[in-house]
Amino acid sequence: MSLFLYGVVEAGAGAVAGTGIDDRPLRAVADGPLMAIVTDHEDRAPLAAPEAVDDYEHTVQRLMDFRAILPAPFGRVLDDDDAVRVMLRRRRRDLLSKLDGVRGAVELGIHARWRDGGFAQRDPRSESGAAYLRARLETRESARRLASELDPLTAVARSIRRALPQHDLPVLDAYLVDRTRVSEFVALVAELGDCLDGIDLVCTGPCPPYSFADGGVIRSTA
Image (cartoon, rainbow, N blue to C red; front, side):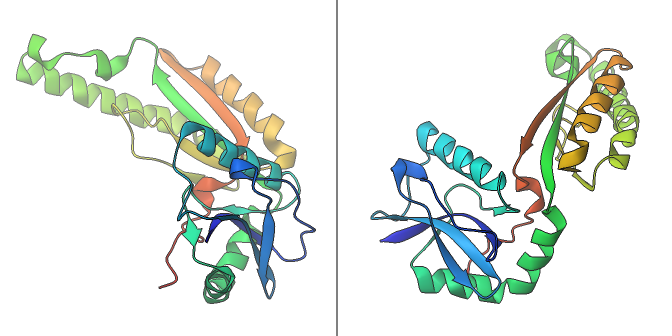
């Protein structure tokens, strides 16, 4: 028997209902002001099959609709209720602080890409070394300019997490945004996108604040 963890919420956030992966009933394991939402499984952990990952994401999304949640990444498993309580107790101060930080907010993502493929479409074998490096430097400079063009979004968001760029373009920025400002944020993304040459901006979400859990429910209790 093992417990599959979906996330951590405040103990006073209301009853837990519904099902998770494999239609297993959700239940809560509480310790003091916190509780973890889990499902019981005979195996060590559900396999990361596409259907299971989709079920997990849909479950966390539903849970977020009714309470602040620090989502766990797919595959976080604990041995039993006692292990869950130990985790909640050891991480209590940190988890409460992070829950306070995401309360009333959702995560929105920004995906930016070159319309013509940008640097990713360049073949170094067709250019001299100097030309290739010069093109790469120009692309990096374009990426820096794009980052500055997105600065107005920080005024609408509580916080931002910027992933490592791919092909010298920041492509997976995550923003923590108040639920009441989601429409404002999306409209601003569209406005900024209209001003960018050769770049498409795509806004995704709202979704649970995966990028802002900061490993709070990921670390081992061992």
